[in-house]
Image (cartoon, rainbow, N blue to C red; front, side, top):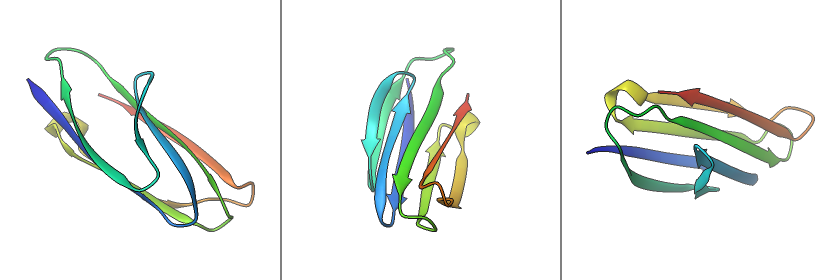
Length: 85
C-alpha cells in the first residue's frame, strides 16, 4: 500500500486540506495517510487569512503525487487549489 506524506504551513490564517472529501490537515501540520493502489485521488485546499500571508504545501510521497507550493494570500483574503494523481 502506498502512503501519502504531506505537510502544510500557514503564517497568519487558517487552512483546510482534503484528500477527496475528507479533511486530513488543518493549519500548519503534517500527516501520513495510507492509499489504495491503482486508485485516483484529489488533494485540494482552502485557505483564508490576512492579505499577503504566505502558506505552503509539500507532498513528498508517493512519487506520482510529489508537489511543492508556496503562495501568498491575495487581497480578498482567500485562496484555494488542488491536484489529482
